[in-house]
Image (cartoon, rainbow, N blue to C red; front, top):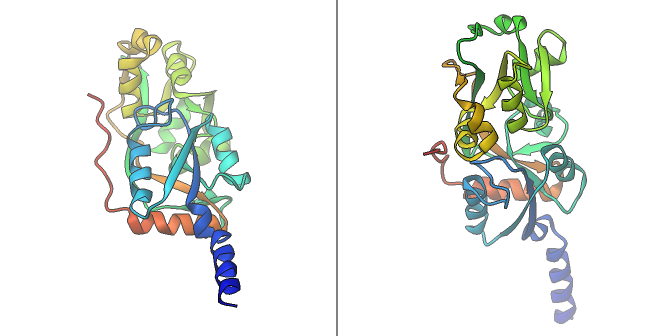
Length: 244
């Protein structure tokens, strides 16, 4: 009888959300310097080391951003996606669509990249109505800006990734683009196409937002268990990623 009860206990543990988290799989995107094409990078190091404190192994795979989001939301084998900006619209604990957000584990300073000497300037969001703004398809940028783009108050030029967005502003397809400052500095140093046009561009001194970076866990029992475990083992928010 004792053997039977032990077997039952093992089976129940193995099918629990926490046990599933021991085979944790997360999606991410190629977003240097935060995440490299291999899936490695400062963000991945933080996520892995946090789960390692609880004895959890993390498998990471890089996908295009919209696919990374979809897999984490719809495919049970993927329990979450990172790095994600916070958005109430996708916060499942506030009536949103899909995310159980972790605590913030990093920062992302986001602002506008413009041609040097351009007339672009802004103090309030209403000022942005006068300009065509380049954004990456599927990215959360900043709540008010995204709302105004969605409602047609601000004209947007869509790009598939940050590199294409930079090349579009260099070609004057928009009057400003939204981009993380560290991402631009990294691409300027590492991407020949961006390096070729970088001297004609400048980062506007007024930030749009300084985002926290989060893991977006799926809205499920497994996702909640993984999120809670991550939060329990996250010691502190690291310093913003340097690019020198």
